[in-house]
Amino acid sequence: MRLDISDVALGLTLVGSGVGGLCASAWSGRLVDRRGSRSVTVSTSVALSLALPLIAVAPAATSMFVVLGVLGALDGLTDVAMNAQAVRLQRSTGRRVISRFHALWSLGAVSGSLIASRAAAADVSLRAQLLVTAAALATTALVTGRWLLSTPGGQDERDDVRVRGGAPRRTLAVLFAVGMAVALAELPPHDWAALLMLDRFELGEGAAALGFVATAGGMLLGRLGGDHVAGRFGVERTRRAGAAMAAVGVAVAATLPTPAVAWLGLFVTGLGLSSLFPLVFQAASELTRGSHSGMAAFSSGARLGFLLASPLVGLVAGWAGVATGVLIVAGTAALAVSLVRLPQPVEMATARAVTPPA
Image (tube, rainbow, N blue to C red):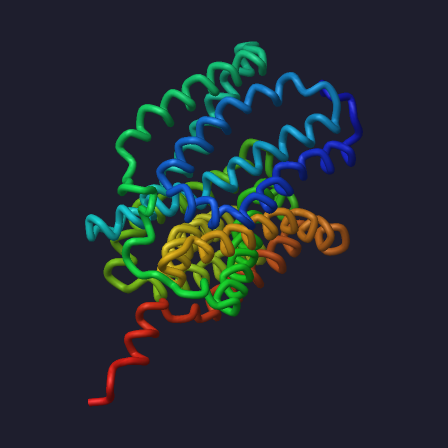
């Protein structure tokens, strides 16, 4: 290992990206309100791409923590801005597309991992990999940014409904809590899937890794079809049903006695989880129309949840096993998301308040 540090020190170093993302997400909404989602999406995407090679040259754990913190912060800003673009595109075209955009994120994560592993197997240095990746991603962001939506003066998402006095604090608190629960539900079935399979069954590492493939495959498939499902059954019903499905899938994977059924449970978990991030981002935008504070609150909660998820699973796994840790953390969080009713959108509540009874 290049940094020559212990596993504990490595774990603390890797927390840097989560800390940076959490701090940036807290004020990402204000930045997008002020500069517009197109400007923020392009500028932060380019900056994030160009900062990637710093990972290969950070000389010590402290500097690596700082680098990861910067990358996490830029990712947190990009997260809110690009989801704001997706929501605005839906409004302007009248077509649901946000789940398919998240499907492309899932596809990018899988393909990026495959490319990196193949490059490493071919003895391509990390510095060379990241330099090529940075150039390709920055160029893509600059070129495609020309087609992102914008209106004069940068007021691109504030031309529909203006919220005087900002979003209600209760609404922001609910979105923050839901964001944390969604992250707690999503991370363990991904990052701990292979270990869950090894914990429960006598499998080789290759077969155990299929646990991650099952979860990721279910999520990709669910996101490809998620817009159609949400259009037919409604955003809120789809979100809550998806969370309930994820809770059932985790329970199946963690308790039933055969590997095939456990893989199926993880696939069902991925299907259920697939709707949560795109649909809650959409709901957060609708709940605080006139600002991006709701999307920022949800993103901040999710960043905190991602920070807490693995330590919580590890804590439970230390005395009860990985499968129990994933079940308790992810299953409980998914169940909680399925039970929460999000507040009404601002404009809907206002319309009901001013409409006289028939």
